[in-house]
Amino acid sequence: DQQVKQNSPSLSVQEGRISILNCDYTNSMFDYFLWYKKYPAEGPTFLISISSIKDKNEDGRFTVFLNKSAKHLSLHIVPSQPGDSAVYFCAASDDNFNKFYFGSGTKLNVKP
Amino acid sequence: DAGVIQSPRHEVTEMGQEVTLRCKPISGHNSLFWYRQTMMRGLELLIYFNNNVPIDDSGMPEDRFSAKMPNASFSTLKIQPSEPRDSAVYFCASSLGVASPLHFGNGTRLTVT
Image (cartoon, rainbow over all chains, first blue to last red; front, side):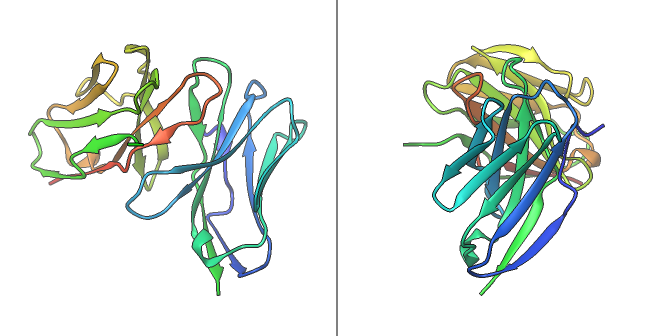
């Protein structure tokens, strides 16, 4: 029973365009959300986070949007670069000792 | 600034053997997590510790799996006896605590033949 879902296993985008990665969750108690990037043979690397008191958080080319009523978050990458090609995971937790639930990941391919 | 360090990077063993995976968290982090990644189940949480105390081990698949954290700078995940279905990448992660991001090691790829 997955509490965090990434329904798109893959996404292909042209360099310079916007990449939009989506994530849905079912548990209304989740209040802290993260996005991770993962390259092959490496561990996931933290990208950006958002807490439930906000609906948007920006860090350079990366912006995360949170829609609590829809239980949906998205990661926007603008402009996309070939080095952004990786698997992206979203994760969510409630305030209970930092236990995180991960989505199944979306593989992003940015074409030069 | 050393990140989370896991060893070994790769482990190949035969069914029935004992396997021990090791993790050194980031200094100062008080939460430690063991995750397993498979094609079928993605990233699943096995167990996590807070201040060296196991908080939730509900993700540990069965009694063949055990984890310890004898001090703030070291943790082990042991599988005894190992089975082919245990083949996966095992990640260790640490964090500063509640509402802090997890920092992952590079994982141990386990193959049980």
